[in-house]
Every structure is written in structure tokens, then in C-alpha cells.
Image (cartoon, rainbow over all chains, first blue to last red):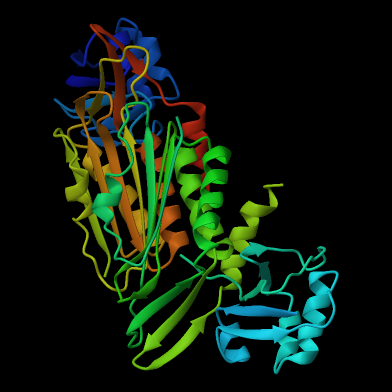
Length: 85
Length: 85
Length: 152
Length: 152
């Protein structure tokens, strides 16, 4: 299954850009499982497991241990710590 | 010796106006002594001893136990608790 | 550079003009402000603020100088109205400029809290021809004393 | 009546216009505000704020709704800029209206503190062609968490 990865903030520099596509094996049951698979598969993917990143699925923040019903074309965004204002 | 008394805030209602002249015996050594004399002498004068009033001599706040070098025509202001802003 | 502006006036406060009074320098990171208005309630006709003709402006200036120093401000403006005001009219406007937000926010809170009990003003509410004096509340005294206790 | 206005824009914030955006009702006793500006330092060319195209505005709105309720505000305005800004330009402007000063002052402090760590923005400082990301400071996290811990 093909999904879209998005990177916001400093993480862009580590992942080499703001977005990239990824091919996923099977259907990871939780966000944690998906991230573990990406960590192995992508260049610099280890960093995706860093605690301080927040993760959004199709523009909604999701807890890492929450159940995942991933579908083709879903967008997974990795968000560096926010620094607004 | 003749001095001027001024009243600011709610104390005006108790003392019957914003200002009045007063005749003083001798030269009270402290503000406390002056206030004690006024307390006896004026209508409603007891109230002048209330703790929450601040007192200014010629437009400067003065502690009640501080020494006083009173002169003819000095202005003693009794200030009700402030309520600005 | 530190800059203290104190305005004490019987005229209606012109907030847009006051907001432009402090210089817009590039080193100011944070600006906080507070405006107190006459709150209309139960047929209030007017709020009257009496000040002391000689003591009030120096008191405002002293509060401002302490705030400038305590919070390491770049600039502080205190504008205070006296006289008779209709419901809705501004009574006091305070603006603090600082490099960082915490200093600007705290300075504004300090200035309004301390001003309430330490600047010689007295308030009277008018309802048609009846006036009642408004005494400071216990809350006012507590909020001011929290700042003042740590001052000495 | 409670009133929440959220503006997220790539255009320069027009502070005088924003200051007129909230209704001037006679029941508003206190108005507090905070403005954060780009602070010029060490040859800074520009500050760039990236936002999330779908998530940032709802996050600002959620922060505003919680503040309105928590501090019993009459109105709250949150205006936040994104894009590239020169030193001195405003980044964020917050205005809170309440019957009493403490609510207005606290609401503004809450909103800016929480917004810093809970609204999806990312900052980059540009010095000519070099950009560095600005990570939130420990102070930012502490100040936000003091409000957030008491929330649940």
C-alpha cells in the first residue's frame, strides 16, 4: 500500500524534504507499528521514533499507540515541536 | 497656629467637605500627636485616627509616627484608601 | 534605552493615539497592554474619578519607574483619566514594551494592580443625582500586596 | 455573549484595524492585549513562519475556545501571521475582553503561552541566505505546561 509522508519543521532537514511517498507492507495495526516499519525502511527513518515528534493522520493528531486503519493514499505527517507566536 | 486640613475621597462625607481650617495648640512633635489633637477638637474627628487613612503634609505622604515640624499655613491632607484604575 | 510616559488628563483617552506614542523599535519583541473601561451597570450614569492635584502624577511616575526597572522594560506608558466619564469610556491605558513576553505581560499586570491601591484616585458612581464612593476591594488589596511584598 | 475571532494570514497584521475588530460594549470593563514582534538581532534578515495548511487554524480556534470558557471572557481575538517577516513586523496579536481585569490579563498570558507550544507553527531565522530553525525553548514548554496541567 502506498502512503504519503509529510514533514513539518526542522525534521524536513533530516528527512531531505517536506514530503515523500512510501510503500507499506501489510496493514500496521497501530501508529507505532507503522512508524517502526518506516524507521527501518527510510533513510534517517530512526528519527521518526523520537518522542518529541507529533504525528497526524490525514491532518488529525493521533496518539502513537492508537489503532490505525490505514488506507491507500493516506497522509502521515510528522511534526517537529511547534514554535509559534 | 493655623493649618489647613484637606480631605480626599469618602472621608469628605464624614468631615463635611473637602477642606477646613484648624487652630492648633503648641507644636505637636509627631503626626500622631497632631492627629490626636484634631481628633478631640473636630466634629467627627475620631475618624481621623483610622488606620486605613493615609496622611500627607504639604503634598508629601508622611508616616504617622514621624517627627513633625509644623508651620503656620501647612496643609495636612487625609486620604481615604485609593481606588484608581 | 528606557522610556517612561505618564499622562494624567481630564480629556477622553485617545487609545489609537496612545498606541502610537511609544517608538516602534526593532529590538522590541513583546508589547502588552491593559485598558480599564467604565463598566455600565444598573443604570449607572457616570463614573467620577477624583485625583490629587499635586500627588497623583508623581505617584504614577514612581510606579512606572519601579516597573521599568523590575521587569527590565524598554518602554512603559501609563495614561490615566480623571473627571466624569460615561459608561464605556476608558479610564486607564497601560502599555509595556520588552524584549520578552513574560516581562511585558507581568509589567502590565504589576502596573494596574499596584496603581489601584497606590495612586491617589478616588471613585464615585453616579446614578442620576445620587453618588456613592467606591472603596477598593479586598481583592484589589491582595493583588497589589502580592507584588509589593516582594519589592523590599 | 461570547465572541471568538481567529485570523491566520500571510499579510502583515494591521494592529489598529484589529484593535477595532471587537465590539466596544458597555459591559466590557477590561481589555488586555499582547503583540509579539520579530525582534531584530545579529543581522537577522527575516523570520519565516511555516504553518500547517489544515491544522493550524483549528488549533488556534480550539485554544481560543478553551480560553473564552476558562476565563469567562466576553470576547477574544487571536491574529497570527505566517510567511516571511522583516524585523519589527508583528507576528501575533491577542486581545481579551472581560468584565474584570484579572480574567483579561490571565487570558492573554494563557493564550500566548499555550499557542507557542500547541499551535502548529515552525520558525526559521534567515540571515541573508542562511536559515536556521528555531526550536521552542524549555521556558516556552514550562510556561505552557503550567496552564495545561491544570486543564484536565
